[in-house]
Image (cartoon, rainbow, N blue to C red; front, side, top):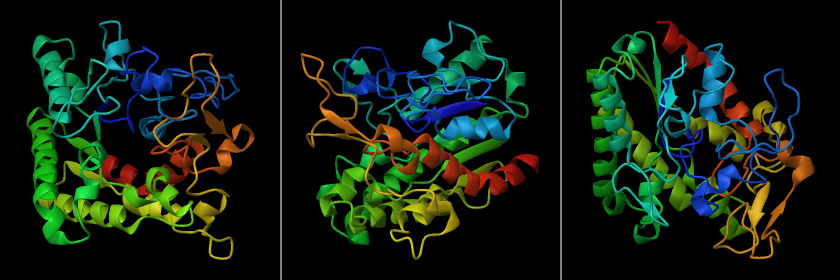
Length: 327
């Protein structure tokens, strides 16, 4: 299993520097950690942007692997028998952003590294036979800086969406040309339902602008991929929507009923410019944490689901994913 993308799939490629980008290495991230036997392990941040598991961990379990393969930067110059993770928090399709001098590779640059390791024999080409490749790039990091410059019209967002989805499709084709036969590609979840956007309504509902953008992106992506037996689009948009759109107990579906809080995060910064895990110079917490009810929240922080949230999402998608992998 080889993973590419952004923080949805990052298992520890961010540095342990103590800033915003490295927050997943610090409390309260990892507070729901469990050991190999499923026993609570106390607070154990692992570089994952969640309280415990993220998407590739759940896919790994579909493959009868306990957890997602380790991050490239934590690999110790060895390719783990289960594979490797190249995904990095903050990654985007185009610009490679920098955070306090820390370089964040784009999707293309992650694949460049993968290709280099194949060429040098660090990763054997035979490892691609039967391997599952997850491309967990939602393009949210490409759109978020520009979303308020776009209105709710196709003409406003179509050109940029066209560029972003074309680049994603190009990189998927690169992986196919390298020999990949089983590629899982995320579409974009409902951007307007993330706490970052739902906060504008005090979590009473989702932001239609963000969801419209996600829908246009996903439609474009589907057209560009077409019918491709090597690629399966993982429909995060529908799976997330099945949970976040059910805001009342009277209409809640079984998959959403387990969450009493569907839009507000379990961990929320006190300042809009802050983030989950932020502390001041005296180590005072600059965030609130619903520590006893984390599993009742769908979202962990401004953008990422809780471990329970990811389990609910991937449970919906498990059957089509397994069918794709088995055929």
